[in-house]
Image (cartoon, rainbow, N blue to C red; front, side, top):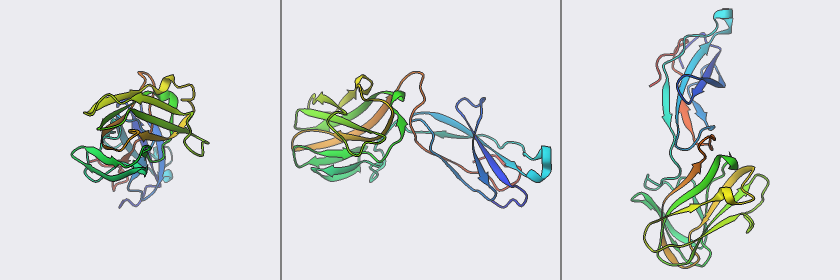
Length: 232
C-alpha cells in the first residue's frame, strides 16, 4: 500500500452482489485479507473502502470495484502433490496425489486418513460424499470429532459396505447420526478394513438447501490508493 492518508480499510463481502456485510477493519498500509468464513462450493463478492478519520463525515472513500472468489466444492485432490490437509496416520503408505486422486496403500486392517482441523456447524451439512476406489475389504467408515473431543471414538462414526473394486461414490448420511451436532472439528476416513490399493477422488460436504456452510478461504487485496482502484 502506497497511500499516505488512509487510517484503515473496510472489507465487505456479499453472496449476491447487492447485500453487503462488513467483515473486517484493516489497519492502514494493509495489502491483503484472508477470509475464513466461507462455504464450500460458493461464490462471493468483495469490495474495499479506504477510511481517513481526519475527514470527519467524509471519512470513507468510494468503494472499489468488486472482486470475486469461488470456493471449491470440497477436497478434490486435483493438484499433484497436494493432499489438501489430509494425512495418513495409521496402516497407510505410499500416499501421493496425482491424476486427480489421492492414492495410498493400506498395509493393515485399520487404515486411517485424517483431515486438517475444521470448524463448522454440523447442522449445515446433511451428507459427506466420498469418491473412492479400493480393491479389497468390506467396510468404509467416516468418523467425526466435535469441539471438546480429545480423540475419535466409536460412537461418532458412519459405516458403509464397500460396493466393488472400481470407483464408487459413497454417501455418508451424517445428518441421521444422533451425535452429528454442535461444531465439527475434524473428519477421519477409514477407507477399508483390509490390505488394499486405494484411490480417493474427492471428499465433499453436502449442505442443506437453506443453510450456510463451513470455512474455505479467499484473499482480498486492498489497492494502493486512499480511493481504492478496481480489484484485479
